[in-house]
Length: 258
Image 1 (tube, rainbow, N blue to C red):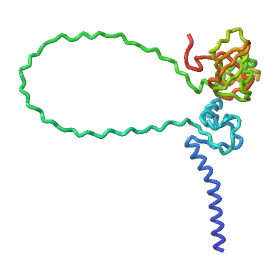
Image 2 (tube, rainbow, N blue to C red):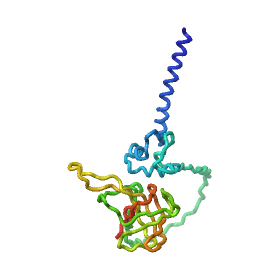
Image 3 (cartoon, helix red, strand yellow):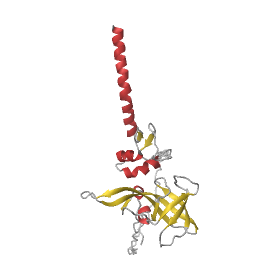
Image 4 (spheres, helix red, strand yellow):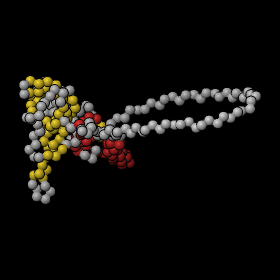
């Protein structure tokens, strides 16, 4: 009888540890800046929970380069929530040198003759005030914008040179423009994609749409009315049909154009 009671309590203890330890391990990982993906999770949800803004999910993608497609993440895989900081190496401190005291030599002092000299004239140089340069903020560059429901920009991405469905940094793409402005080789453009519609909180009438910034491209060649461009920066995977708008130095580089 005592043996059966001992086996019963041992089994209860093991089951308690089985259910408690995973929760403790999860809390430790999240405290270290690492979250383990659960079934049904998306980068959008994880960004909303830990970065307090679902539209910053491209930052999680950049911090976890093993994720090749941001739309496909798998339960059990880790997601780093913060950037890795380089470990600072402590430089060896120089060993203190022995200080050898020298006895002062006896010097026969001659009588000093003090000369009265006029105070030197110090020329005051005008202070040079450096102009403060505006600084761009990486997290705001990838934030979307609001516009009309049917905003189409000035062009679209037609195709990838290699026939890819999803494109990213350094890929070559083909563009088509519908603008009266000149499109020159070397020009940069911002790629965007339509998102959810915005409704008036009282009338429930559609008043606009949110658009997500996908990245930036640079024109490198022209063939008639079609242009070849290189993806120089991507916050999300490019797709055929993504739209193009003029590049803004103020938002992308923190430079205010005069």
